[in-house]
Length: 147
Image (tube, rainbow, N blue to C red; front, side):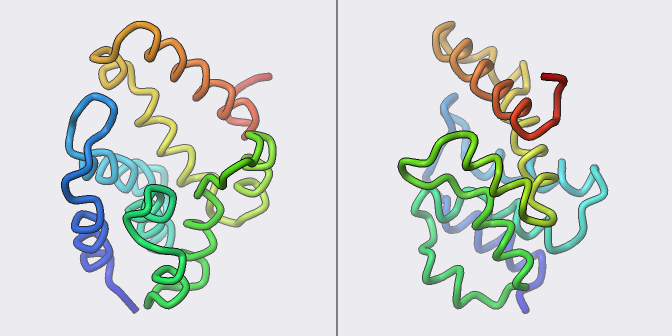
């Protein structure tokens, strides 16, 4: 099984050269989500999934790689749960997260970093508004906020 240090290195390498919407190195987001999972009491499987949460979705790593990786079945399930699929509705996506043990905590940490006001402040107003509304809708679908 890959250690958390190996998973972190692998994720950083897989996303090397990628940036977020604000132009920051994408690895900063991965680190923030992993730290968020850890601070929320997440276990090693969830922390590993946090490092890899966007890897398949962003084509940094393939689904085949994930299937064959030396990771726990739980880590793989959480990564698959938080990976958005083409054509699925937000409701379908949220349902899969809620149905997968351990996935909600990873998505909660991801949303918390994505919606960080300091991170959003550097974006233009239309993008900031669109993303703020998008993250609030997903939090509501996941039961992380009042309806």
